[in-house]
Structures are given as structure tokens and as C-alpha cells.
Length: 250
Image 1 (cartoon, helix red, strand yellow):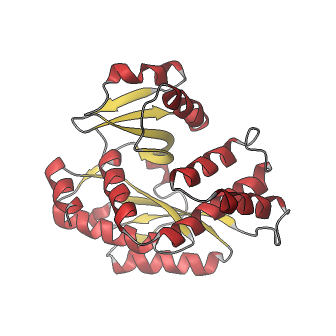
Image 2: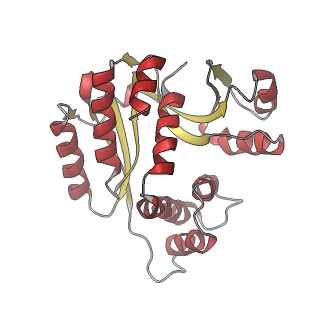
Image 3: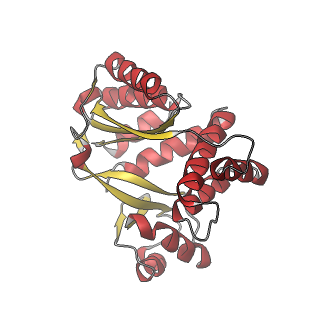
């Protein structure tokens, strides 16, 4: 199985223990605002907005905050949003390829922050197209394999999921980018609890890393995600279950 679900579990635990809720809400608000600006404030008619709002709800973001972010994107709020989507490509510790997504009102500032973080970690910022070809945009829903079997997730296949990947701890339901919400809704209706459901850049191939390198990768991802401008960081690393367990226990 890919390293995504293992990494997602580490990040999920960190989200619970870290006192970063305010920063997280800021980023979620930006995604909602940009989605509303691009496709309108009607959730039913704007799939990107529906996904952004659902992610905010999953994080227990208050309804008033969500509505303010929508209003800001549509121009109904005090100030219309002026954020731009950005994508940076580069290499991190161990030579892993990294895609770094963000929303910013100052591309020069954000680019400088990303370059500094990668360089400090022994990596480098690449040119556009340098690593993006190694990833595919994919919907990924992670489910606890100790609670559910693949048979429990057949409803996801019926709703349009492309595949189910499994190991001893997790099940990953894989979807096309436009099918994620429909598959998520089908699982919710079937009362299947999900650990996460999101659009990710899924690596086509992965680089196996040891414990020391994984710790370095985690540090640079933490540094990047500490920036309000950076949303999601994707990398093509994997590691053994023992290595993930050792690092997640820090």
C-alpha cells in the first residue's frame, strides 16, 4: 500500500494534539473563498466549494466562519478575496519529489519561503514541470481496516470509485477528482466512518526512506505547513510500517 494513509494518520494525530486550530481555520477559509470566487457560492452547483466546505466541517470549523469565507469569495462580504493558487515543485530530503500547493496574495513572498525551507532541508526548488509528471490528481478516502473490510466498501465502487487499496491497518478508496464527493456521500449513507477524504497528488512511484530521512521530511513539511500561504504538501516517499510507527510516536 502507498505511504499516503500512514502519513495521513500521522498528520491526523498531530492535528488533534497541536494547538494550530486558528491557523488551520485560516487556510480552510482561504480554500472556501477561492472556490466560491471561481465557481459561485452555491454549494450544490460548485463541486470545488462543496469539497472545501466539507473539509472545513470535518475540522469542526464554525458555520459562521464558513459562510463568511463564502461571502468573501462571492463579493458579498466586506472585501472580495484576492488570493491566487500556486504550485511549487522541488526535491526534499532523500531526493523525494515534492509538490507544494498554496493560496497567496504575494507570490514572491511565498516562493521565497518555499525555497528557503527546501534549501535548509538539503533539497532544492525546481522548475515548473520538474516533478509534477510523477503525480496524478486523485481522490483518496482512508478507512480503518480493523473496523471495515473491502466488502463493506463495495458501495464506494458502485458510486464510482476506481479501486480499493489495502494493508493491515488501512483501506484506501481511490477515485477520480470529480467523483470524490459522490463516493464520500455513498460511504456516509452506508454509515462507514472515514479517517480522511481529500484530493491529493498521488505519486506514480515512491522512494523508500529510512527513519532519519523520514524525520527530516516531516520537519520540512511541518515548516512549509506552518506558513499561512501553504495548504497541502505532497511527496513520493514511503517507508516500512516500523519506520512510520517509530516516527509517529515522537
